[in-house]
Image (cartoon, rainbow, N blue to C red):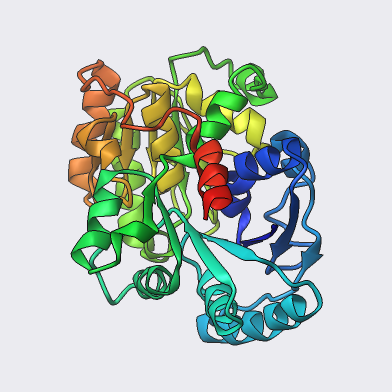
Length: 351
């Protein structure tokens, strides 16, 4: 069986890494396709080494700001790839425009399609990613979900349940695999940070970054309520921020293993990233998510995550709770056990 795995952005590689390692260990025939370019600046030179996975077999080279243009160009390029490199099953990841494009091409060619991290919903059809999710899940022959809530979404939408498999959260496979490989970043020495006595802040969502006025209010709320706790901030663009309130310090991105250490040993995490929030749940680290919803509600219901949307006042209150140590205790959701890749391979073998 020839497996083709398609990634459309850096976070996708982190999610498929356990599956790639499992395929390699079992000497399976597979290929890895990246829809972007080989010189993509988001793919740091250490990423593939840190994850201990191969670099992509091919880069489709699609780079555009237009989602419709990305869709069309990826469809054309991926169709040409499959023409020359046939596959028995194609695995697509998450909910990008490039993911949807690869899914459409796969089904037009009559190839079995599997969706990794299926069933996630925001229930906001105005979001392009929500449209992508619905299309991909509707086309998929195998829907691999991370939890009960995601599986129930597919059931509500009428997806045949013999296609849906709750395999667990594949990010946890990585966290368990890297548990003894985390690397203490040099910035901890530079900033004199002590384990458990700092906050990590990440912001990448365009809606937050584009509203500079509210972003400034949110940063101020964090600074005012963090007291003397240092805040290490990783924000995609800081040029438009007029004031850099203390104790927030901005840093460029870190390699995967260093960032993993930093978040695992933090007093708390503030983020707009679902992946980072899921990792915080695994690490039992208090987490505030700067969004009104999360793809994996288990991080809120069972884990350490709290949603504050884009409300600066509510954010400030939660930061104060975090710093005071008055935070709920979290547990690991069902099947967040580090064996997701094994389950996926078993399903593929039996299918």
